[in-house]
Length: 212
Length: 217
Image (cartoon, rainbow over all chains, first blue to last red; front, top):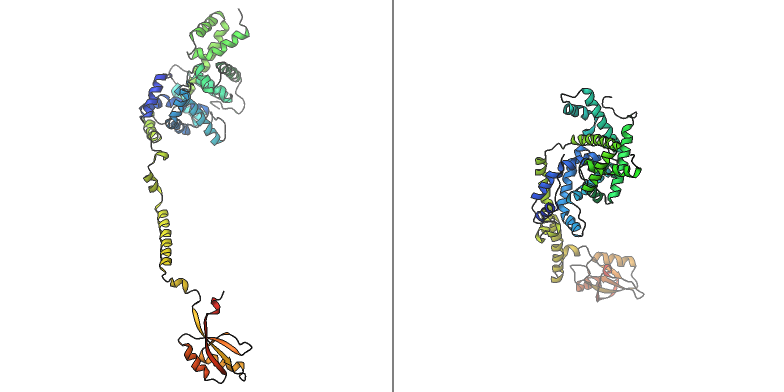
Protein backbone atom coordinates (compact mmCIF):
# COMPACT_ATOMS: atom_id res chain seq x y z
CA UNK A 1 0.00 0.00 0.00
CA UNK A 2 2.66 2.48 -1.01
CA UNK A 3 1.19 5.94 -1.08
CA UNK A 4 1.26 7.87 -4.34
CA UNK A 5 2.25 11.43 -3.62
CA UNK A 6 1.26 14.02 -6.19
CA UNK A 7 3.20 17.18 -6.71
CA UNK A 8 1.70 20.66 -6.95
CA UNK A 9 2.79 20.74 -10.60
CA UNK A 10 0.78 17.59 -11.32
CA UNK A 11 -2.26 19.09 -9.64
CA UNK A 12 -1.88 22.30 -11.66
CA UNK A 13 -1.55 20.30 -14.88
CA UNK A 14 -4.73 18.40 -14.04
CA UNK A 15 -6.63 21.64 -13.48
CA UNK A 16 -5.43 22.97 -16.83
CA UNK A 17 -6.70 19.82 -18.52
CA UNK A 18 -10.05 20.09 -16.78
CA UNK A 19 -10.40 23.70 -17.88
CA UNK A 20 -10.49 22.53 -21.51
CA UNK A 21 -12.81 19.60 -20.75
CA UNK A 22 -10.07 16.95 -20.88
CA UNK A 23 -10.64 14.18 -18.33
CA UNK A 24 -7.35 12.36 -18.88
CA UNK A 25 -5.82 13.78 -15.71
CA UNK A 26 -8.94 12.92 -13.80
CA UNK A 27 -8.60 9.30 -14.92
CA UNK A 28 -5.09 9.20 -13.51
CA UNK A 29 -6.34 10.73 -10.28
CA UNK A 30 -9.12 8.16 -10.11
CA UNK A 31 -6.75 5.27 -10.67
CA UNK A 32 -4.43 6.63 -7.99
CA UNK A 33 -6.96 7.14 -5.24
CA UNK A 34 -9.93 4.90 -5.94
CA UNK A 35 -8.89 1.87 -3.89
CA UNK A 36 -7.46 3.96 -1.08
CA UNK A 37 -10.69 6.00 -0.87
CA UNK A 38 -12.77 2.87 -0.98
CA UNK A 39 -10.84 1.42 1.96
CA UNK A 40 -11.13 4.67 3.88
CA UNK A 41 -14.89 4.77 3.32
CA UNK A 42 -15.32 1.17 4.44
CA UNK A 43 -13.03 1.80 7.39
CA UNK A 44 -15.20 4.71 8.42
CA UNK A 45 -18.24 2.47 8.38
CA UNK A 46 -19.82 2.92 4.94
CA UNK A 47 -21.23 -0.42 3.76
CA UNK A 48 -18.99 -1.92 1.05
CA UNK A 49 -21.93 -2.01 -1.36
CA UNK A 50 -22.36 1.78 -1.08
CA UNK A 51 -18.68 2.65 -0.83
CA UNK A 52 -17.89 2.13 -4.53
CA UNK A 53 -20.61 4.50 -5.66
CA UNK A 54 -19.64 6.95 -2.94
CA UNK A 55 -16.05 7.04 -4.22
CA UNK A 56 -17.31 7.60 -7.78
CA UNK A 57 -19.46 10.45 -6.47
CA UNK A 58 -16.37 12.08 -4.93
CA UNK A 59 -14.76 12.35 -8.36
CA UNK A 60 -17.96 13.46 -10.05
CA UNK A 61 -18.30 16.20 -7.44
CA UNK A 62 -14.73 17.23 -8.09
CA UNK A 63 -15.37 17.29 -11.85
CA UNK A 64 -18.25 19.69 -11.14
CA UNK A 65 -16.50 21.94 -8.64
CA UNK A 66 -12.83 21.85 -9.59
CA UNK A 67 -12.95 25.63 -10.15
CA UNK A 68 -13.77 25.97 -6.46
CA UNK A 69 -10.57 24.10 -5.59
CA UNK A 70 -8.54 26.36 -7.86
CA UNK A 71 -10.26 29.38 -6.33
CA UNK A 72 -9.34 28.28 -2.83
CA UNK A 73 -5.72 27.73 -3.78
CA UNK A 74 -5.59 31.09 -5.48
CA UNK A 75 -6.46 32.72 -2.17
CA UNK A 76 -3.33 31.43 -0.52
CA UNK A 77 -4.57 28.19 1.07
CA UNK A 78 -2.30 25.65 -0.51
CA UNK A 79 -4.47 22.62 0.19
CA UNK A 80 -3.30 19.64 -1.80
CA UNK A 81 -5.68 17.95 -4.17
CA UNK A 82 -5.54 14.75 -2.13
CA UNK A 83 -6.58 16.64 1.01
CA UNK A 84 -9.37 18.34 -0.89
CA UNK A 85 -10.68 15.06 -2.27
CA UNK A 86 -10.40 13.39 1.14
CA UNK A 87 -12.49 16.19 2.60
CA UNK A 88 -15.18 15.55 -0.03
CA UNK A 89 -14.96 11.86 0.80
CA UNK A 90 -15.42 12.49 4.52
CA UNK A 91 -18.39 14.74 3.89
CA UNK A 92 -19.97 12.09 1.72
CA UNK A 93 -19.38 9.46 4.41
CA UNK A 94 -21.09 11.76 6.90
CA UNK A 95 -24.03 12.10 4.49
CA UNK A 96 -24.31 8.32 4.31
CA UNK A 97 -24.31 8.04 8.09
CA UNK A 98 -26.95 10.73 8.37
CA UNK A 99 -29.04 8.88 5.80
CA UNK A 100 -28.63 5.61 7.60
CA UNK A 101 -29.17 7.39 10.93
CA UNK A 102 -26.42 5.56 12.63
CA UNK A 103 -22.82 5.87 13.61
CA UNK A 104 -19.93 4.01 12.13
CA UNK A 105 -20.62 0.29 11.88
CA UNK A 106 -17.23 -0.79 10.75
CA UNK A 107 -17.66 -4.27 12.14
CA UNK A 108 -21.14 -4.91 10.88
CA UNK A 109 -20.00 -4.65 7.31
CA UNK A 110 -19.71 -7.99 5.53
CA UNK A 111 -16.11 -7.15 4.66
CA UNK A 112 -15.32 -7.29 8.35
CA UNK A 113 -17.73 -9.93 9.53
CA UNK A 114 -16.48 -13.01 11.29
CA UNK A 115 -17.75 -15.13 8.46
CA UNK A 116 -15.81 -13.09 5.96
CA UNK A 117 -12.72 -13.47 8.12
CA UNK A 118 -13.21 -17.18 8.36
CA UNK A 119 -13.80 -17.68 4.69
CA UNK A 120 -11.38 -15.29 3.08
CA UNK A 121 -8.75 -14.49 5.59
CA UNK A 122 -7.95 -18.06 6.61
CA UNK A 123 -7.14 -18.96 3.06
CA UNK A 124 -5.09 -15.84 2.62
CA UNK A 125 -3.16 -16.30 5.82
CA UNK A 126 -2.88 -20.07 5.61
CA UNK A 127 0.69 -20.10 4.45
CA UNK A 128 2.69 -23.25 4.98
CA UNK A 129 4.83 -22.18 7.91
CA UNK A 130 1.91 -20.96 10.01
CA UNK A 131 -0.01 -23.14 12.37
CA UNK A 132 -3.80 -22.77 12.54
CA UNK A 133 -3.42 -21.51 16.12
CA UNK A 134 -1.20 -18.64 14.98
CA UNK A 135 -3.60 -17.72 12.20
CA UNK A 136 -6.51 -17.68 14.63
CA UNK A 137 -4.54 -15.64 17.17
CA UNK A 138 -3.65 -13.07 14.54
CA UNK A 139 -7.22 -12.84 13.35
CA UNK A 140 -8.32 -12.28 16.92
CA UNK A 141 -5.84 -9.45 17.34
CA UNK A 142 -7.06 -7.75 14.14
CA UNK A 143 -10.66 -8.14 15.10
CA UNK A 144 -9.93 -6.68 18.50
CA UNK A 145 -8.04 -3.82 16.89
CA UNK A 146 -10.97 -3.03 14.64
CA UNK A 147 -13.36 -3.05 17.57
CA UNK A 148 -11.12 -0.78 19.62
CA UNK A 149 -10.70 1.67 16.73
CA UNK A 150 -14.44 1.86 16.29
CA UNK A 151 -14.77 3.11 19.84
CA UNK A 152 -12.51 6.11 19.27
CA UNK A 153 -14.00 9.50 18.38
CA UNK A 154 -13.98 9.95 14.60
CA UNK A 155 -11.43 12.81 14.67
CA UNK A 156 -9.00 10.50 16.47
CA UNK A 157 -9.66 7.38 14.46
CA UNK A 158 -9.52 9.32 11.16
CA UNK A 159 -6.15 10.84 12.05
CA UNK A 160 -4.87 7.48 13.28
CA UNK A 161 -6.02 5.74 10.10
CA UNK A 162 -4.52 8.32 7.76
CA UNK A 163 -1.22 8.44 9.65
CA UNK A 164 -0.73 4.69 9.93
CA UNK A 165 -2.37 3.38 6.78
CA UNK A 166 -2.17 6.21 4.26
CA UNK A 167 1.14 7.64 5.56
CA UNK A 168 -0.09 11.20 5.81
CA UNK A 169 2.26 13.83 7.19
CA UNK A 170 1.50 15.93 10.23
CA UNK A 171 1.00 19.02 8.04
CA UNK A 172 -1.44 17.24 5.74
CA UNK A 173 -3.47 15.99 8.68
CA UNK A 174 -3.61 19.46 10.20
CA UNK A 175 -4.78 20.85 6.84
CA UNK A 176 -7.48 18.22 6.53
CA UNK A 177 -8.79 18.70 10.05
CA UNK A 178 -8.20 22.43 9.97
CA UNK A 179 -6.20 22.47 13.20
CA UNK A 180 -2.62 22.92 14.36
CA UNK A 181 0.02 20.16 14.08
CA UNK A 182 0.18 20.06 17.89
CA UNK A 183 -3.53 19.23 18.04
CA UNK A 184 -2.97 16.40 15.59
CA UNK A 185 -0.07 15.08 17.65
CA UNK A 186 -2.10 15.12 20.86
CA UNK A 187 -5.08 13.52 19.12
CA UNK A 188 -2.89 10.71 17.90
CA UNK A 189 -1.33 10.27 21.33
CA UNK A 190 -4.72 10.08 23.02
CA UNK A 191 -5.95 7.69 20.31
CA UNK A 192 -2.92 5.49 20.87
CA UNK A 193 -3.43 5.44 24.66
CA UNK A 194 -7.11 4.55 24.28
CA UNK A 195 -6.28 1.90 21.75
CA UNK A 196 -3.59 0.29 23.91
CA UNK A 197 -5.89 0.33 26.90
CA UNK A 198 -8.65 -1.25 24.87
CA UNK A 199 -6.33 -3.86 23.36
CA UNK A 200 -5.09 -4.93 26.77
CA UNK A 201 -8.61 -5.71 27.95
CA UNK A 202 -10.01 -9.18 27.39
CA UNK A 203 -12.97 -9.67 25.02
CA UNK A 204 -16.09 -8.65 26.83
CA UNK A 205 -19.18 -10.79 26.99
CA UNK A 206 -21.20 -10.30 23.84
CA UNK A 207 -18.21 -9.44 21.66
CA UNK A 208 -17.45 -11.80 18.80
CA UNK A 209 -14.60 -14.17 19.02
CA UNK A 210 -13.37 -15.56 15.80
CA UNK A 211 -14.31 -19.11 16.71
CA UNK A 212 -17.23 -18.72 19.02
CA UNK B 1 18.78 7.49 32.52
CA UNK B 2 15.05 7.71 32.94
CA UNK B 3 12.77 9.69 30.64
CA UNK B 4 10.85 12.62 31.98
CA UNK B 5 7.17 12.80 31.13
CA UNK B 6 7.56 15.69 28.65
CA UNK B 7 10.15 13.85 26.62
CA UNK B 8 8.13 10.66 26.77
CA UNK B 9 5.10 12.52 25.55
CA UNK B 10 6.99 14.10 22.67
CA UNK B 11 8.42 10.72 21.74
CA UNK B 12 4.98 9.09 21.66
CA UNK B 13 3.54 11.94 19.64
CA UNK B 14 6.19 11.54 16.98
CA UNK B 15 5.87 7.76 16.83
CA UNK B 16 3.21 7.58 14.05
CA UNK B 17 5.21 9.88 11.79
CA UNK B 18 8.46 8.02 12.43
CA UNK B 19 6.73 4.79 11.49
CA UNK B 20 5.18 6.17 8.31
CA UNK B 21 8.47 7.79 7.32
CA UNK B 22 7.26 11.37 7.13
CA UNK B 23 9.25 12.79 10.03
CA UNK B 24 11.54 15.75 9.26
CA UNK B 25 15.29 15.15 9.43
CA UNK B 26 15.83 17.05 12.69
CA UNK B 27 13.01 15.29 14.48
CA UNK B 28 14.07 11.96 13.06
CA UNK B 29 17.61 12.37 14.40
CA UNK B 30 16.25 13.29 17.84
CA UNK B 31 13.87 10.33 17.72
CA UNK B 32 16.63 7.85 16.87
CA UNK B 33 18.85 9.23 19.62
CA UNK B 34 16.02 8.63 22.06
CA UNK B 35 15.77 5.05 20.89
CA UNK B 36 19.45 4.51 21.61
CA UNK B 37 19.45 6.22 24.98
CA UNK B 38 16.17 4.95 26.42
CA UNK B 39 15.47 1.25 26.08
CA UNK B 40 11.80 1.73 27.05
CA UNK B 41 11.37 3.71 23.85
CA UNK B 42 12.03 0.54 21.93
CA UNK B 43 9.09 -1.08 23.71
CA UNK B 44 6.80 1.77 22.61
CA UNK B 45 8.10 1.48 19.09
CA UNK B 46 7.60 -2.30 18.90
CA UNK B 47 4.07 -2.07 20.31
CA UNK B 48 3.25 0.57 17.77
CA UNK B 49 4.78 -1.41 14.93
CA UNK B 50 2.59 -4.40 15.81
CA UNK B 51 -0.54 -2.27 15.90
CA UNK B 52 0.34 -0.51 12.64
CA UNK B 53 1.11 -3.79 10.88
CA UNK B 54 -2.17 -5.31 11.99
CA UNK B 55 -4.10 -2.24 10.98
CA UNK B 56 -2.50 -2.15 7.55
CA UNK B 57 -3.14 -5.86 7.10
CA UNK B 58 -6.79 -5.47 8.11
CA UNK B 59 -7.32 -2.55 5.75
CA UNK B 60 -5.39 -4.30 2.98
CA UNK B 61 -8.02 -7.02 2.93
CA UNK B 62 -10.63 -4.54 1.80
CA UNK B 63 -10.93 -4.16 -1.92
CA UNK B 64 -13.71 -3.04 -4.25
CA UNK B 65 -15.68 -5.72 -6.07
CA UNK B 66 -15.37 -3.98 -9.44
CA UNK B 67 -11.96 -3.58 -11.07
CA UNK B 68 -10.59 -0.07 -11.45
CA UNK B 69 -10.61 -0.32 -15.27
CA UNK B 70 -14.28 -1.27 -15.32
CA UNK B 71 -15.18 1.39 -12.78
CA UNK B 72 -13.17 3.98 -14.72
CA UNK B 73 -15.20 3.39 -17.88
CA UNK B 74 -18.41 3.92 -15.93
CA UNK B 75 -17.05 6.93 -14.08
CA UNK B 76 -15.86 8.69 -17.25
CA UNK B 77 -19.40 8.80 -18.58
CA UNK B 78 -20.46 10.67 -15.47
CA UNK B 79 -17.48 13.04 -15.57
CA UNK B 80 -18.17 13.99 -19.15
CA UNK B 81 -21.65 15.03 -18.15
CA UNK B 82 -20.25 16.98 -15.20
CA UNK B 83 -17.51 18.60 -17.30
CA UNK B 84 -19.81 19.37 -20.24
CA UNK B 85 -20.34 23.11 -20.75
CA UNK B 86 -24.05 22.52 -21.51
CA UNK B 87 -25.60 23.31 -18.21
CA UNK B 88 -28.99 24.90 -17.73
CA UNK B 89 -27.68 28.49 -18.15
CA UNK B 90 -25.95 27.70 -21.40
CA UNK B 91 -28.88 25.95 -23.13
CA UNK B 92 -29.86 27.83 -26.32
CA UNK B 93 -33.24 29.53 -26.34
CA UNK B 94 -34.69 27.27 -29.02
CA UNK B 95 -34.01 24.23 -26.85
CA UNK B 96 -36.05 25.76 -24.05
CA UNK B 97 -38.95 26.12 -26.44
CA UNK B 98 -38.65 22.50 -27.48
CA UNK B 99 -38.81 21.50 -23.84
CA UNK B 100 -42.25 23.13 -23.36
CA UNK B 101 -44.82 20.37 -23.70
CA UNK B 102 -46.75 20.29 -26.96
CA UNK B 103 -50.02 20.05 -25.09
CA UNK B 104 -49.41 23.37 -23.38
CA UNK B 105 -48.85 24.98 -26.77
CA UNK B 106 -52.03 23.42 -28.13
CA UNK B 107 -54.06 24.65 -25.17
CA UNK B 108 -52.73 28.19 -25.39
CA UNK B 109 -53.34 28.31 -29.17
CA UNK B 110 -56.94 27.06 -28.84
CA UNK B 111 -57.76 29.62 -26.17
CA UNK B 112 -56.27 32.41 -28.29
CA UNK B 113 -58.23 31.36 -31.38
CA UNK B 114 -61.53 31.31 -29.50
CA UNK B 115 -60.84 34.73 -28.04
CA UNK B 116 -59.91 36.27 -31.40
CA UNK B 117 -62.95 34.71 -33.08
CA UNK B 118 -65.33 36.13 -30.48
CA UNK B 119 -63.78 39.59 -30.78
CA UNK B 120 -64.01 39.45 -34.60
CA UNK B 121 -67.69 38.48 -34.52
CA UNK B 122 -68.48 41.27 -32.09
CA UNK B 123 -66.71 43.83 -34.26
CA UNK B 124 -68.44 42.79 -37.49
CA UNK B 125 -71.83 42.77 -35.76
CA UNK B 126 -72.63 39.28 -36.91
CA UNK B 127 -75.53 37.61 -35.16
CA UNK B 128 -74.59 35.34 -32.35
CA UNK B 129 -77.85 33.46 -32.68
CA UNK B 130 -77.20 30.69 -30.23
CA UNK B 131 -76.44 33.27 -27.57
CA UNK B 132 -79.39 35.55 -28.29
CA UNK B 133 -82.05 32.82 -28.47
CA UNK B 134 -81.77 32.41 -24.78
CA UNK B 135 -82.74 36.05 -24.20
CA UNK B 136 -86.28 37.60 -24.59
CA UNK B 137 -87.10 39.45 -27.82
CA UNK B 138 -86.58 43.06 -26.94
CA UNK B 139 -87.70 44.71 -30.13
CA UNK B 140 -90.50 47.32 -29.89
CA UNK B 141 -93.88 45.65 -30.22
CA UNK B 142 -96.89 47.38 -31.89
CA UNK B 143 -99.74 48.13 -29.54
CA UNK B 144 -103.36 49.18 -29.73
CA UNK B 145 -105.43 51.08 -27.20
CA UNK B 146 -109.06 50.19 -26.51
CA UNK B 147 -111.66 52.16 -24.57
CA UNK B 148 -114.16 49.71 -23.14
CA UNK B 149 -117.91 50.32 -23.04
CA UNK B 150 -119.13 50.86 -19.46
CA UNK B 151 -121.94 48.32 -19.88
CA UNK B 152 -119.61 45.36 -20.64
CA UNK B 153 -118.35 42.94 -18.02
CA UNK B 154 -114.62 42.14 -17.54
CA UNK B 155 -115.22 38.43 -18.25
CA UNK B 156 -116.67 39.30 -21.67
CA UNK B 157 -113.62 41.49 -22.42
CA UNK B 158 -111.23 38.62 -21.55
CA UNK B 159 -113.20 36.31 -23.83
CA UNK B 160 -112.88 38.84 -26.65
CA UNK B 161 -109.09 39.14 -26.17
CA UNK B 162 -108.69 35.36 -26.13
CA UNK B 163 -110.73 34.99 -29.29
CA UNK B 164 -108.50 37.40 -31.22
CA UNK B 165 -105.27 36.19 -29.67
CA UNK B 166 -104.57 39.56 -28.06
CA UNK B 167 -102.27 40.01 -25.09
CA UNK B 168 -103.13 42.50 -22.36
CA UNK B 169 -100.17 44.75 -21.64
CA UNK B 170 -101.63 47.42 -19.39
CA UNK B 171 -104.95 48.59 -17.93
CA UNK B 172 -107.70 48.93 -17.30
CA UNK B 173 -107.41 52.42 -15.85
CA UNK B 174 -110.15 54.57 -14.32
CA UNK B 175 -111.26 55.62 -17.81
CA UNK B 176 -111.74 51.99 -18.89
CA UNK B 177 -108.76 51.98 -21.24
CA UNK B 178 -106.56 48.94 -21.93
CA UNK B 179 -103.41 48.48 -24.04
CA UNK B 180 -102.88 45.36 -26.08
CA UNK B 181 -99.90 43.87 -27.89
CA UNK B 182 -100.48 43.06 -31.51
CA UNK B 183 -99.85 39.32 -31.99
CA UNK B 184 -97.23 38.11 -34.52
CA UNK B 185 -98.65 37.61 -38.01
CA UNK B 186 -101.25 40.42 -37.64
CA UNK B 187 -101.03 44.11 -38.21
CA UNK B 188 -102.35 46.82 -35.93
CA UNK B 189 -105.01 47.75 -38.54
CA UNK B 190 -106.34 44.20 -38.68
CA UNK B 191 -106.61 44.08 -34.91
CA UNK B 192 -108.41 47.43 -34.80
CA UNK B 193 -110.91 46.33 -37.49
CA UNK B 194 -111.67 43.05 -35.74
CA UNK B 195 -112.19 44.54 -32.24
CA UNK B 196 -114.15 47.64 -33.33
CA UNK B 197 -117.00 45.38 -34.43
CA UNK B 198 -117.55 44.23 -30.83
CA UNK B 199 -120.13 46.04 -28.67
CA UNK B 200 -117.72 45.83 -25.75
CA UNK B 201 -115.35 48.32 -27.37
CA UNK B 202 -116.30 51.96 -27.40
CA UNK B 203 -113.19 53.21 -29.21
CA UNK B 204 -110.05 51.55 -30.69
CA UNK B 205 -106.93 53.35 -31.79
CA UNK B 206 -103.22 52.70 -32.38
CA UNK B 207 -100.80 53.30 -29.49
CA UNK B 208 -97.12 53.99 -29.38
CA UNK B 209 -95.04 50.80 -29.70
CA UNK B 210 -93.19 49.71 -26.53
CA UNK B 211 -90.87 46.95 -25.40
CA UNK B 212 -92.45 43.86 -23.87
CA UNK B 213 -92.57 43.75 -20.02
CA UNK B 214 -89.76 41.10 -19.98
CA UNK B 215 -87.43 43.69 -21.48
CA UNK B 216 -88.30 46.45 -19.03
CA UNK B 217 -85.54 47.16 -16.53
